[in-house]
Image 1 (cartoon, rainbow, N blue to C red):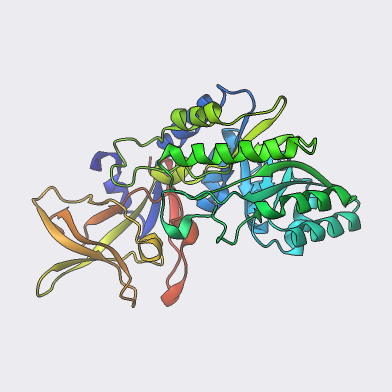
Image 2: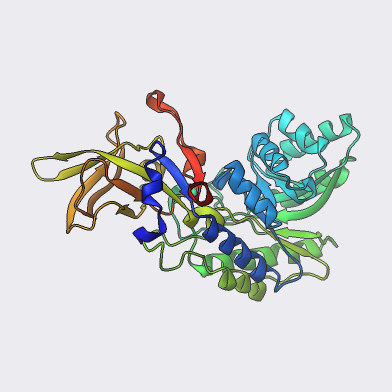
Length: 386
């Protein structure tokens, strides 16, 4: 749908850059809020690691979402955006002392603790500053997800979380520490999940864990199921807003919530993924022996997902309505993996054409790097061109 892009206005800025459709972002946020509101104990924290563009965070804060952070820098970004500390949860597999101290200083809602050594350090630092840290145990439930192997996080072989075999020991430790308050259990099994059976399996595992805790007369106040809901990369216009209705309803049907418990979610990709596109221009059309190349000014320094995960992004030539031809779409980086797609059908490509790599709002701009001494791409909102 080329009409959704202000191509003439694009000529006023340097490519490559990220373009964010804020109408779609706000529609997505409204849908999230409406669907979560069906269940009066559901709370949504946006996973900042998906996209930390300051203007995007401002819109998310306006919608009233909390923040899920995995670094001290993300905690700072959340606070700077005006997200209340009381709505910030802080995960991360290895938190540095200064990051923990930052969370304690601002009295964030909860630390999602990933190991017993980390729990002991949080207690030491909380004792030193006279605070009590609220924590939830991130439990590794050994539940797989139908997604890329590089973005599964809930298997026993993964580095994340406390293995269930050690949960009782971790609880005993938490109860013995004077500046720790255990308020919940936390899970996250992976990303880009479209099969609801994965979330059903997670709910079943959480139910089993809660039954085990009940045998010790322990009931936590908060259940955090993480994020993971995926988006449609192949057809971004078919379902631009993910199916939050089915997602939340699936959890409500299968998670056995105890009286008074609150349920938390940490969506990232599903909030911002479809609203963003990487806009690039064609530098050259190169004819090879058996193929032709559309060579862009964007490379994997701007969007690393295809090189890192073999991820698919729909590619569109915004400047041409000519008959389609087949191209390998590549970037300018001096690496053979700097390829966005092979054998891609595009309207006939010419030097200077604008090309959009769709569904790039999540893990696009935030993962950009300066390899080859390249400048980082800027991010623009749709209203910047109005």
